[in-house]
Length: 371
Image 1 (tube, rainbow, N blue to C red):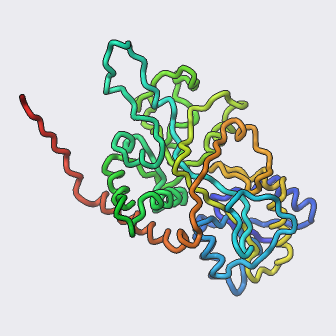
Image 2: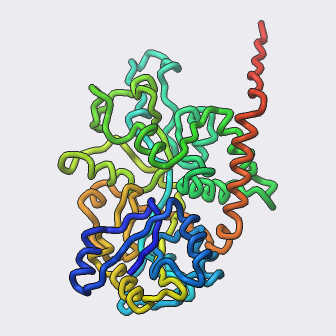
Image 3: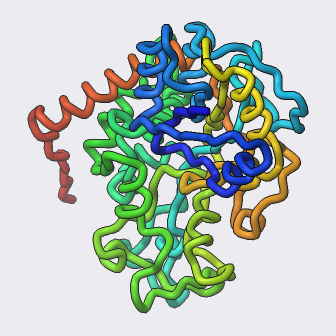
């Protein structure tokens, strides 16, 4: 049986081996670079499908896949209880996992240094306030300390763009600044764009392994400044599961981690699997969809994104129980985001291109009034 997915979606190898041992069905996995590449291949191979099962379709493309008839309805035989809001109408796609995408930050960077009560604070070493939501990205006090994945080249960046559009819609709103203007201001204030979520999270963000001689304890931490971070930055766009992901790379279960989650303005993205329309092994594909909902597969679904199982009754890993964060996220309407996200992506690219090729921003004018 052939399964098609993309490089950012994790399929638990141990669970698939168990599936083959119990059923005798060998699973051959093909990977495209992006979810869009997967959908394009399914469209080009309608007459002679290249796969029996597709997995890794996300909320952005859910409606398109259903409306285009790229998958066929299938109702799992014994579906477990699902996380609220993940179910796809019509059963053309079955929820497998999800992420809650949100801001992550380095708590030690925002510690206010101690000072005698009779001394004024040194404004040169005072950190910005702890970020509370997406507003931090277009606050001049924060923008130069943040790195985000570029929505033009990163799916995680697109999830950020969806969250930003929700708070700052481009149309039909006279009360808020449209998100393209917000993005332009973020760039002018010095926010950094990374070409991928891997670079943003694991190379440019300062979370995880601390620099030498920097204490990781948050009970009585020393203040951390940008020079202490040696070129890395204290805020990024990640997921609620990112602390638990970092914990898995530590020797044993750490007591504390210098990484935290901003619980406001998160966005929930579901990931789905389906039997490909016209699949030569349709019945076998249904058996794999059934297996993807079973506890063994669901428990192993976590990945470097910090993905979570779609079933609500699966026991969490020790890392998630200790460091995972539960939020009340925004759940995008698949029909709305599906019809608009590619247009938003073009707008995003245009704003970035205009900023990079246009004239430098004007220097701020400072007026000094003498007594």
